[in-house]
Image (cartoon, rainbow, N blue to C red; front, side):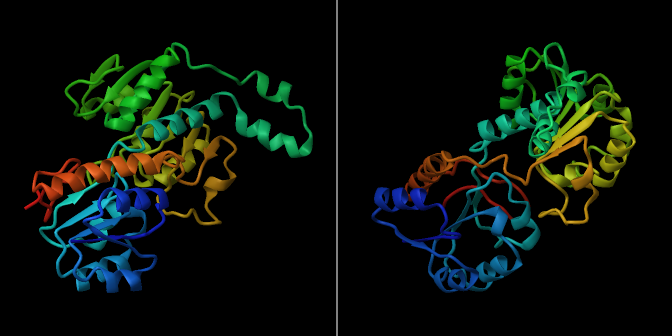
Length: 324
């Protein structure tokens, strides 16, 4: 049996997988041309949504003659769905692996706004002691209300962390129940909930249904003192509408780790907004991720070898979920 890793950047995970499964021929590759060559005869492809671009999709489609399972080292597979997956191949992902890391980053963005950390950092090269300038605008999170959109693994960990700051958390989700949430509401009550929130945290998955779930109308429903944080996907927020709201002071501030087009273009107005904290899609990064990735992959490899149903199956058109 042959398994291909692309990209082969997960050094520790690959090394552990090779040692744990000597019966599998594991082949790390570094570029689409080598992928096209080595995917021939492979039953398994381990890849990442981030690099599943049209040339990668084409290499898989044209050369994967024996493929029986694809595993993504990411939670999302939006690039893969857009660029094309082989029909009928079971697809699994690494959902939840980044939950605590992303939740911590979300709270960091929020705290950066409430504690004016970006302003303090910007003043340092000028040797400017900005205490008087920022002092009156600092705030804390105690007794504030968070509208948390999305209660998957990431959303649930954000809720847990928010409760540690003594916040009231209103979840907006289809979930039947969720721990650490004071109240759960359906999406039909989104705008009502936005009007009550001091913090709007966007942590839901992206789909056509959630495209621009935060649009001009949603932003208009928010308090002028509210803070928006997006650590989901850039297209969950209508970017021009957000820029206008921030410029006009219709919301207090925002913290975002994702943008509609990445990398963000040099001429984007987002760069120049003083009431925006921006990070370059790094919320899921962490040195311990490779060990988590190995545990997720190892479990599904054992299930595959035993011809058992997979864990973390991605459902959708042309996707199926059991090893055969």
